Length: 319
Image (cartoon, one colour):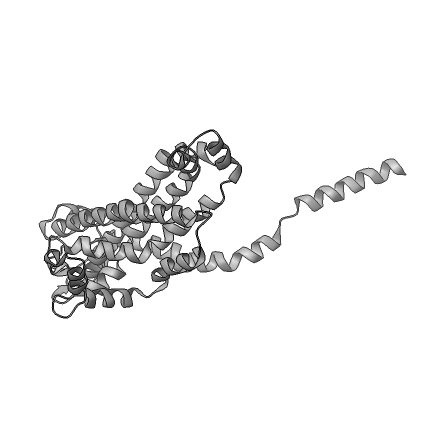
Protein backbone atom coordinates (compact mmCIF):
# COMPACT_ATOMS: atom_id res chain seq x y z
CA UNK A 1 0.00 0.00 0.00
CA UNK A 2 2.89 2.34 0.65
CA UNK A 3 4.20 1.92 -2.91
CA UNK A 4 0.78 2.69 -4.37
CA UNK A 5 0.13 5.79 -2.25
CA UNK A 6 3.49 7.42 -2.93
CA UNK A 7 2.93 8.08 -6.66
CA UNK A 8 -0.53 9.47 -5.92
CA UNK A 9 0.94 11.96 -3.46
CA UNK A 10 3.64 12.97 -5.96
CA UNK A 11 1.04 13.40 -8.70
CA UNK A 12 -1.15 15.61 -6.54
CA UNK A 13 1.88 17.69 -5.54
CA UNK A 14 2.92 18.12 -9.19
CA UNK A 15 -0.59 19.17 -10.20
CA UNK A 16 -0.74 21.69 -7.37
CA UNK A 17 2.56 23.21 -8.41
CA UNK A 18 1.69 23.45 -12.09
CA UNK A 19 -1.70 25.05 -11.52
CA UNK A 20 -1.96 28.47 -13.18
CA UNK A 21 -1.68 31.33 -10.62
CA UNK A 22 -5.14 32.84 -11.08
CA UNK A 23 -4.66 35.20 -8.16
CA UNK A 24 -1.82 36.98 -9.99
CA UNK A 25 -4.07 37.63 -12.98
CA UNK A 26 -6.84 38.92 -10.69
CA UNK A 27 -4.51 41.43 -9.05
CA UNK A 28 -2.80 42.54 -12.27
CA UNK A 29 -5.88 42.73 -14.48
CA UNK A 30 -7.22 46.14 -13.27
CA UNK A 31 -3.86 47.85 -13.65
CA UNK A 32 -3.26 46.16 -17.01
CA UNK A 33 -6.67 47.22 -18.33
CA UNK A 34 -6.19 50.84 -17.20
CA UNK A 35 -2.65 50.98 -18.59
CA UNK A 36 -3.78 49.51 -21.91
CA UNK A 37 -6.76 51.83 -22.17
CA UNK A 38 -4.95 55.07 -21.31
CA UNK A 39 -1.35 54.41 -22.46
CA UNK A 40 -0.86 51.54 -24.88
CA UNK A 41 -3.94 52.11 -27.05
CA UNK A 42 -3.39 55.91 -27.40
CA UNK A 43 0.26 55.25 -28.25
CA UNK A 44 -0.48 52.85 -31.09
CA UNK A 45 -3.42 54.93 -32.30
CA UNK A 46 -1.15 58.00 -32.46
CA UNK A 47 1.36 56.06 -34.56
CA UNK A 48 -1.48 54.87 -36.82
CA UNK A 49 -2.82 58.41 -37.20
CA UNK A 50 0.62 59.71 -38.20
CA UNK A 51 0.42 57.52 -41.31
CA UNK A 52 -2.66 59.34 -42.62
CA UNK A 53 -3.30 62.79 -44.06
CA UNK A 54 -6.51 64.79 -44.32
CA UNK A 55 -7.84 66.66 -47.33
CA UNK A 56 -10.07 69.72 -47.66
CA UNK A 57 -13.20 67.68 -46.95
CA UNK A 58 -11.80 66.25 -43.74
CA UNK A 59 -11.43 62.73 -45.13
CA UNK A 60 -8.22 60.90 -44.28
CA UNK A 61 -6.20 58.72 -46.60
CA UNK A 62 -3.13 56.60 -46.04
CA UNK A 63 0.17 58.30 -46.95
CA UNK A 64 2.68 56.06 -45.19
CA UNK A 65 5.75 58.01 -44.14
CA UNK A 66 4.73 61.05 -46.17
CA UNK A 67 3.96 63.12 -43.08
CA UNK A 68 7.44 62.48 -41.70
CA UNK A 69 9.01 63.50 -44.99
CA UNK A 70 6.94 66.70 -44.87
CA UNK A 71 7.95 67.35 -41.26
CA UNK A 72 11.66 66.95 -41.96
CA UNK A 73 11.94 68.56 -45.40
CA UNK A 74 9.03 70.93 -46.06
CA UNK A 75 10.16 74.51 -45.21
CA UNK A 76 6.74 75.21 -43.69
CA UNK A 77 7.34 72.52 -41.07
CA UNK A 78 11.01 71.62 -40.91
CA UNK A 79 12.19 75.02 -39.70
CA UNK A 80 9.94 74.96 -36.64
CA UNK A 81 10.66 71.28 -35.95
CA UNK A 82 14.46 71.60 -36.02
CA UNK A 83 14.27 74.81 -33.97
CA UNK A 84 12.13 73.05 -31.34
CA UNK A 85 14.46 70.03 -31.30
CA UNK A 86 17.54 72.24 -30.91
CA UNK A 87 15.92 74.19 -28.08
CA UNK A 88 14.89 70.91 -26.44
CA UNK A 89 18.47 69.67 -26.53
CA UNK A 90 19.65 72.92 -24.91
CA UNK A 91 16.84 72.65 -22.35
CA UNK A 92 17.95 69.10 -21.53
CA UNK A 93 21.66 69.99 -21.39
CA UNK A 94 21.02 72.78 -18.88
CA UNK A 95 19.09 70.39 -16.66
CA UNK A 96 21.75 67.70 -16.93
CA UNK A 97 24.59 70.03 -15.98
CA UNK A 98 22.97 72.55 -13.63
CA UNK A 99 20.06 70.66 -12.08
CA UNK A 100 21.81 67.34 -11.56
CA UNK A 101 25.05 69.05 -10.54
CA UNK A 102 23.30 71.12 -7.90
CA UNK A 103 21.26 68.07 -6.86
CA UNK A 104 24.47 66.09 -6.33
CA UNK A 105 26.02 68.91 -4.29
CA UNK A 106 22.95 69.35 -2.12
CA UNK A 107 22.69 65.59 -1.58
CA UNK A 108 26.32 65.50 -0.44
CA UNK A 109 25.70 68.33 2.03
CA UNK A 110 22.52 66.74 3.37
CA UNK A 111 24.29 63.42 3.90
CA UNK A 112 26.87 64.95 6.22
CA UNK A 113 26.55 63.20 9.60
CA UNK A 114 27.02 66.40 11.62
CA UNK A 115 24.41 68.44 9.74
CA UNK A 116 21.77 69.93 12.03
CA UNK A 117 18.21 70.29 10.75
CA UNK A 118 18.72 68.14 7.68
CA UNK A 119 15.05 67.13 7.49
CA UNK A 120 14.02 70.81 7.43
CA UNK A 121 16.43 71.56 4.60
CA UNK A 122 15.24 68.54 2.61
CA UNK A 123 11.62 69.64 2.96
CA UNK A 124 12.33 73.24 1.93
CA UNK A 125 14.40 72.20 -1.07
CA UNK A 126 11.84 69.64 -2.24
CA UNK A 127 8.83 71.92 -1.67
CA UNK A 128 8.93 73.70 -5.10
CA UNK A 129 8.59 70.30 -6.80
CA UNK A 130 5.15 69.87 -5.27
CA UNK A 131 3.86 73.31 -6.30
CA UNK A 132 1.69 73.85 -9.35
CA UNK A 133 3.54 74.75 -12.52
CA UNK A 134 1.03 77.54 -13.17
CA UNK A 135 1.83 79.08 -9.78
CA UNK A 136 5.57 78.77 -10.41
CA UNK A 137 5.30 80.41 -13.81
CA UNK A 138 3.12 83.25 -12.53
CA UNK A 139 5.38 83.99 -9.56
CA UNK A 140 8.57 84.08 -11.63
CA UNK A 141 6.94 86.26 -14.26
CA UNK A 142 6.09 88.77 -11.53
CA UNK A 143 9.56 88.61 -10.02
CA UNK A 144 11.36 89.08 -13.34
CA UNK A 145 9.06 91.77 -14.70
CA UNK A 146 11.19 94.85 -15.58
CA UNK A 147 8.45 97.26 -14.43
CA UNK A 148 7.29 96.00 -11.05
CA UNK A 149 9.34 92.86 -10.38
CA UNK A 150 11.60 92.53 -7.35
CA UNK A 151 14.51 90.88 -9.19
CA UNK A 152 16.09 94.23 -10.08
CA UNK A 153 15.88 95.43 -6.47
CA UNK A 154 17.42 92.21 -5.15
CA UNK A 155 20.31 92.49 -7.58
CA UNK A 156 20.78 96.15 -6.58
CA UNK A 157 21.23 95.06 -2.94
CA UNK A 158 24.24 92.90 -3.86
CA UNK A 159 25.61 95.42 -6.36
CA UNK A 160 24.62 93.54 -9.54
CA UNK A 161 21.86 95.81 -10.79
CA UNK A 162 23.69 96.51 -14.05
CA UNK A 163 23.28 92.86 -15.05
CA UNK A 164 19.48 92.94 -14.83
CA UNK A 165 17.47 92.93 -18.03
CA UNK A 166 14.20 91.70 -19.52
CA UNK A 167 15.49 88.16 -19.55
CA UNK A 168 12.15 86.58 -20.46
CA UNK A 169 11.64 89.06 -23.29
CA UNK A 170 14.97 88.66 -25.10
CA UNK A 171 15.60 85.88 -27.60
CA UNK A 172 19.15 85.42 -26.36
CA UNK A 173 18.19 84.84 -22.71
CA UNK A 174 14.57 83.60 -22.70
CA UNK A 175 15.36 79.88 -23.06
CA UNK A 176 18.13 80.01 -20.46
CA UNK A 177 15.86 81.85 -18.02
CA UNK A 178 12.99 79.40 -18.42
CA UNK A 179 15.41 76.49 -18.08
CA UNK A 180 16.81 77.85 -14.82
CA UNK A 181 13.29 78.37 -13.47
CA UNK A 182 12.60 74.71 -14.26
CA UNK A 183 15.87 73.75 -12.57
CA UNK A 184 14.85 75.66 -9.45
CA UNK A 185 11.52 73.87 -9.31
CA UNK A 186 12.68 70.30 -9.95
CA UNK A 187 16.15 70.16 -8.40
CA UNK A 188 14.61 68.40 -5.40
CA UNK A 189 14.01 65.21 -7.39
CA UNK A 190 17.64 64.36 -8.26
CA UNK A 191 18.66 65.63 -4.84
CA UNK A 192 16.45 63.11 -3.03
CA UNK A 193 17.36 60.20 -5.33
CA UNK A 194 21.09 60.81 -4.92
CA UNK A 195 20.67 61.44 -1.19
CA UNK A 196 18.93 58.06 -0.81
CA UNK A 197 21.85 56.37 -2.58
CA UNK A 198 24.44 58.14 -0.44
CA UNK A 199 22.91 57.20 2.90
CA UNK A 200 22.78 53.55 1.81
CA UNK A 201 26.57 53.37 1.53
CA UNK A 202 27.85 51.43 4.57
CA UNK A 203 29.84 53.49 7.02
CA UNK A 204 32.46 50.72 7.15
CA UNK A 205 33.65 51.57 3.64
CA UNK A 206 33.92 55.27 4.43
CA UNK A 207 35.69 54.61 7.73
CA UNK A 208 38.14 52.24 6.06
CA UNK A 209 39.00 54.85 3.43
CA UNK A 210 39.48 57.48 6.14
CA UNK A 211 41.73 55.18 8.14
CA UNK A 212 43.83 54.57 5.03
CA UNK A 213 44.47 58.32 4.88
CA UNK A 214 41.93 59.43 2.27
CA UNK A 215 40.67 62.98 2.61
CA UNK A 216 37.05 64.09 2.11
CA UNK A 217 37.53 64.70 -1.62
CA UNK A 218 39.26 61.35 -2.14
CA UNK A 219 36.53 59.55 -0.21
CA UNK A 220 33.92 61.15 -2.44
CA UNK A 221 35.77 60.59 -5.73
CA UNK A 222 37.03 57.06 -5.17
CA UNK A 223 34.41 55.58 -2.81
CA UNK A 224 31.09 57.41 -2.87
CA UNK A 225 30.92 58.43 -6.52
CA UNK A 226 31.53 54.94 -7.99
CA UNK A 227 28.87 53.49 -5.70
CA UNK A 228 26.21 56.03 -6.71
CA UNK A 229 26.95 55.88 -10.46
CA UNK A 230 23.94 53.60 -11.11
CA UNK A 231 21.71 56.15 -9.38
CA UNK A 232 23.26 58.96 -11.40
CA UNK A 233 22.49 56.97 -14.54
CA UNK A 234 18.85 56.61 -13.51
CA UNK A 235 18.67 60.32 -12.71
CA UNK A 236 20.13 61.12 -16.14
CA UNK A 237 17.62 59.03 -18.07
CA UNK A 238 14.73 60.38 -16.00
CA UNK A 239 15.94 63.90 -16.76
CA UNK A 240 16.13 63.08 -20.46
CA UNK A 241 12.61 61.65 -20.65
CA UNK A 242 11.10 64.42 -18.53
CA UNK A 243 12.69 67.22 -20.54
CA UNK A 244 11.70 65.82 -23.91
CA UNK A 245 8.15 65.53 -22.60
CA UNK A 246 8.22 69.04 -21.12
CA UNK A 247 5.44 71.45 -21.98
CA UNK A 248 3.60 72.87 -18.99
CA UNK A 249 6.16 75.32 -17.57
CA UNK A 250 6.99 76.94 -20.91
CA UNK A 251 3.29 77.13 -21.75
CA UNK A 252 2.57 78.74 -18.36
CA UNK A 253 5.31 81.36 -18.79
CA UNK A 254 5.51 82.02 -22.54
CA UNK A 255 2.27 80.57 -23.93
CA UNK A 256 1.85 78.25 -26.90
CA UNK A 257 3.86 80.53 -29.19
CA UNK A 258 6.89 80.06 -26.91
CA UNK A 259 8.19 83.54 -27.62
CA UNK A 260 9.88 85.72 -28.26
CA UNK A 261 10.02 84.58 -31.88
CA UNK A 262 9.86 80.88 -30.89
CA UNK A 263 13.12 81.16 -28.94
CA UNK A 264 11.69 78.99 -26.11
CA UNK A 265 9.82 76.62 -28.40
CA UNK A 266 10.41 72.95 -27.63
CA UNK A 267 8.86 69.78 -29.01
CA UNK A 268 6.01 69.87 -26.49
CA UNK A 269 4.82 73.35 -27.42
CA UNK A 270 5.39 72.65 -31.13
CA UNK A 271 3.19 69.57 -30.82
CA UNK A 272 0.48 71.55 -29.04
CA UNK A 273 0.28 74.17 -31.79
CA UNK A 274 0.39 71.54 -34.52
CA UNK A 275 -2.29 69.26 -33.10
CA UNK A 276 -4.74 71.73 -31.55
CA UNK A 277 -3.92 74.86 -33.52
CA UNK A 278 -3.24 78.26 -32.01
CA UNK A 279 -4.35 81.72 -33.11
CA UNK A 280 -3.99 81.77 -36.93
CA UNK A 281 -2.47 78.28 -37.13
CA UNK A 282 -5.06 75.62 -37.94
CA UNK A 283 -4.72 72.38 -36.01
CA UNK A 284 -3.88 69.17 -37.87
CA UNK A 285 -4.43 65.92 -35.95
CA UNK A 286 -2.42 63.91 -38.47
CA UNK A 287 0.60 66.22 -38.40
CA UNK A 288 0.25 66.52 -34.64
CA UNK A 289 0.40 62.73 -34.39
CA UNK A 290 3.48 62.85 -36.62
CA UNK A 291 5.20 65.27 -34.25
CA UNK A 292 4.21 63.11 -31.27
CA UNK A 293 5.62 60.02 -32.98
CA UNK A 294 8.84 61.88 -33.75
CA UNK A 295 9.08 62.79 -30.06
CA UNK A 296 8.60 59.11 -29.20
CA UNK A 297 11.41 58.13 -31.57
CA UNK A 298 13.77 60.70 -30.04
CA UNK A 299 12.99 59.46 -26.53
CA UNK A 300 13.40 55.82 -27.58
CA UNK A 301 16.80 56.54 -29.11
CA UNK A 302 17.93 58.21 -25.89
CA UNK A 303 16.64 55.36 -23.74
CA UNK A 304 18.27 52.71 -25.95
CA UNK A 305 21.59 54.55 -25.82
CA UNK A 306 21.33 54.55 -22.04
CA UNK A 307 20.34 50.89 -21.78
CA UNK A 308 22.97 49.49 -24.14
CA UNK A 309 25.71 52.09 -23.89
CA UNK A 310 25.61 53.25 -20.28
CA UNK A 311 23.74 50.84 -18.02
CA UNK A 312 25.91 47.85 -18.86
CA UNK A 313 29.01 49.78 -17.87
CA UNK A 314 27.38 50.94 -14.66
CA UNK A 315 26.38 47.43 -13.58
CA UNK A 316 29.89 46.76 -12.41
CA UNK A 317 29.36 49.48 -9.78
CA UNK A 318 26.08 48.07 -8.45
CA UNK A 319 26.23 47.61 -4.76
